[in-house]
Amino acid sequence: MNATSAYWEHFEHSADIGVRGVGRSPAEAFEQAALALTAIVTDPDSVAARTRVPIECQEADLELLFVDWLNAVIYEMATRQLLFARYTVRIDGPLLKAEAQGEPIELQRHRPVVEIKGATYTELKVQQRPDGLWIAQCVVDV
Image (spheres, rainbow, N blue to C red):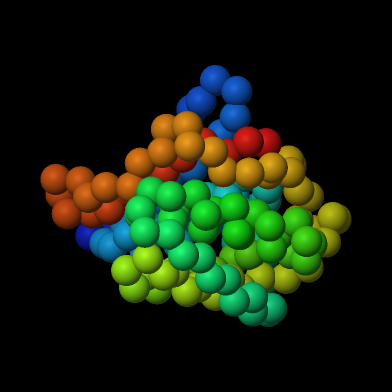
């Protein structure tokens, strides 16, 4: 893995699913972690970026901001019946402004596997690694 590459992944947890985003900045790590959320439900590549949804969160602590961000994404997915394929995040101090792009859930095409209930504080971490990349992770309740 190239040290300058952003990516997402899941990590093992006894009862639920861990999501982890890695990027060159906290914002990019948050974007990748949100993609990991989508990947819990369906293949992100199967989702078209047709509908744009603005999302804002505010929290002074970066780790708490991360949990708020993921819960805002989960809320938008649930209430709008959308799946998201692309995220753009900007963080300015305590304020996060983002746009999620996706489309309505189509059961036959997306074949959702589980419903995500919420992001938790379990395994919560937002920090810069020695290689300069940022990691943002926590466990989500499914």
